Each structure stands twice: as C-alpha cells, then as structure tokens.
Amino acid sequence: MDSQEVTQLLDTRPADRRSRARYLPLVLDGLRITLFLLVIINVSRIHQSVKMIGAMRPGLLVVLVAGVFAVLNPRKANRRDLFKTTEAKLILALFIVACLSAVAGISLGNSVKFIIERYSKVVIASFLLLAGIRHARDLYTLMWAYVIGSGTLAYMAIFMFKVTKRFGSNVARLQELYTFDSNDIGVVLMVGIPIALLLARHTSGIRKWFCFLVVAAIGVAMARSGSRGTLVGLVGTGGVLLMALKTVPLWKRVTFVGVIGIALVAAAPPGYWEQMQTILGLKEDYNWTSKDGRRQLLFRGLGYMAHYPLTGLGIDNFGRAECLSTLSEKVLTHVRGTGLKCSAPHNTYLQVGAETGLSGLTIWLMLIFGGIKRLRVMRRRLPKAWRAGDAEQRFMYDATLYLPIALVGFAITTVFVTFAWLDIAYIAIAYQAGLTIAVRKRLAQDLATQSVPVARAPAPAPIGVALPAT
Image (cartoon, rainbow, N blue to C red; front, side, top):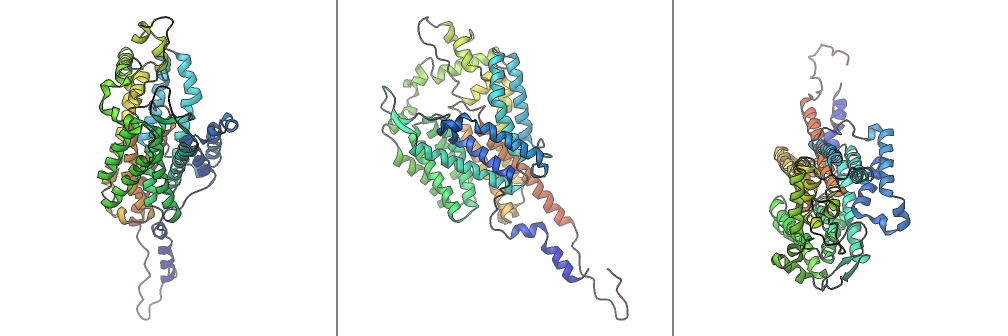
C-alpha cells in the first residue's frame, strides 16, 4: 500500500465526511416523507379544515402507508433497535396496562372501541416514527415536521379560527376549532417552541428565519387562545429556557423569550388580561366553586382511583363514570330533570391515574419526568468535544438540552388539559428514543474509528534490499 492509497483511505473515513457539512441535511426518502406528513397531520390537524379530506381519515391512511414502506424497505427502517430504548419499552407497557384496564374497568365495550379506533393508532404511529429514526439526520428531518405542523396550527389560529365571546362572558378567545380546543393548542405549541429554537440553532438562511417566525406566531396564537393554563405553561417554559440554555448567550435567551412575550401582549384579545388575573383568585373561580370545576373533578378522580387502584376505570371511561356510574357523587346527588355533564378530567395525570390506575400513572410519570432526567443524564455523559464537533455531534449535544425543555412545557400545560392518549406526547417521546439510538450509534462509530489503527506508508528500505510485493 503506497502513500497515495493511505491518503485515500483517510479521506473516506465517516467522521471526516460528516465534519465537512456545517449543518445536517434533510433525509427525504419514501419512509421519511410519509412520517413527515404523519407528524404534520397529527400536530396541526390541518386535514380537518376540509371536510372531504377529513372524512378520508388521512392520519390512518398515512400510518398504513408508512407501515408498508417499513415492511417493504427493511434497510430504510430501524427495526433492530425498535425496543432497545427505555421509552419504547414504557410506551409498550402503558399500552398493555391500558388494555388490562379495559378488561377490569367499568365499560369494556367503550374502552375496547377507544383502543381500536384511536389509541392503537397513536401507539403504532409512535413506533413507526421511532423506526424511521436511524441516525441524527433522520431525527433532524422529522423534527422539522413538528415545527412545520406547529407553524400551520399557529397560522390557522391567527387567520382561520375565530375569536369570539361566549354567551355571558366578556373574554374573547378562539372558538370553533377542529379537534383541538383553545386550551389544547397551548400544549401542542408549547412543545413546538424548544424544537423550533433547536432547529434555528442548527440551520441558516430562510430556514432559520422560518423557525423564528413560527416562534413569534406561537406567541400570537397563545394570546388568541385565551387559555390560563397556556400562560402558566409559557411562564414556566420561558423560565426554564432562560436558566437552562447556558450554552446560549444571555441576550439571545432573553430575545427568544421576549419575542414570544411581545407577540402575546400585542395580540391579546379583549378581556385577556382580566381573564389571566383570575389565576390569582382561584377561590372565586368556577373551577373552585362548580361541581364540574377542576377542584371537584380532582376529588372525584381521586375517589375513582381509590375504588380501582390497580387498573383504574378503564381507558376513556372517566367521562362515563361522571354521568353513569354510582361511583360518582355527582350521579348519586343528581336531581332528575336537570342536566348532567359527562366531564373530562381536565388534568392528564388525573386522567391516567383514574383510567389506568397507579400502574399506568407510574409508567406515565416515568415517560415524562423520567424522560427529562434521562436526557439530562445523557447530556452529562456525552463527550464535551461534541459541543464544538461536527454538525451531527453538535445537533445531538444540543438536542439533549432542548428536548427536556419541550417535555417540561408539556408537563406543565397538561396539568390543565386531558392529553394522555393523544399523539403529541408520543411524538416527543419518540424523538427522545430516536436521539438515544442516534447517540449510541455515533459513539460506537467514533470508538471504532479511534480503535482501528491507521495504515501507514512503509518506511524506505535500505539500499540493496527489495520491498515485498503489496
């Protein structure tokens, strides 16, 4: 092997090829494009703006197409590592617990119908998304889908959904939305803020400005939602952004939070700040005094958990218990001839605990809060050189910082809404599991590259001694 061949060998090493690019490229093959569309649909629900398209159930159709792609193109899918992450195992465990809760709950038929028609699709989609993440470039690509979906949802909240006052209220807020209501979009968009900021840090030009535009649009959409829970989540997430992004200059962190705050203040509809001030006077709020308010819902939900501590009422049976089961004090004291509301729990943790018992609640906490901890541990164990490494190393190093913030935003805002069996949490968790897989593979590749001895050109032979043939 002569010196020219040695040079060619060194030039084709994977680490060298990766280091040439400043930013990661998008991976847009058949499977990734299908999963890209799936994330956009689940985040924005844009298909429901056209009744004909919505009736075709494009979400289910895209899941089927993605499954076909994964089966027919095994090299394009990461099936080998599908169940090698803690997150994937916990999602599967939660699904099993949900199925067991259906059998032991108060309405087998209602739970089974919900699992077949809705929850199974959510779980399958999360595993397909995870199967589509083989390395950091795939993760980077599919995160763009969440940002585009968030931007689309924010656009609809600004230009399509109407801001009106409810009867008897002086507060104007978003009305007549599709699947998500004015409180729900706060959860979806809160997760989108850290992801958009992460991608803005790892791109340039028009893509970077698009990310900043999405963040500003999210601030406007949150104001128009009129949601108090969203404001609480925004304050909490903004505080974490300011404190946690230590690798980002302080003025940039303040700018990030300031852009959202200015957009929110500028777009606040009539009565918004009066509505937000009621957060400080909870005892005068209907959520404290009404039998269908969050306070009474919490007490009744804890009662359901006490009656079914292991398996719960059964998935999707909380509302059924509220208006049909004698477990509910509201049902027992109901006066005939008056209305009876089948209330949702309006708290994701209460929803999981009441419907799947302590076992389901434990798994959920391990997914969300355990996920935050696992990402922090991962960041501490990564080589510090990755912070200034190639595009792939820098992206994964930063992702261990921004993804926990997305989970923090989700954890705060879901205190006020019912979100356990919807797609958003499972998309974020799939991103986390995909990051784990990508980090493991890159560490193994770096280790292999360092351990393989580099071929050297043979030293000149003494005069009169012939070199052996190579």
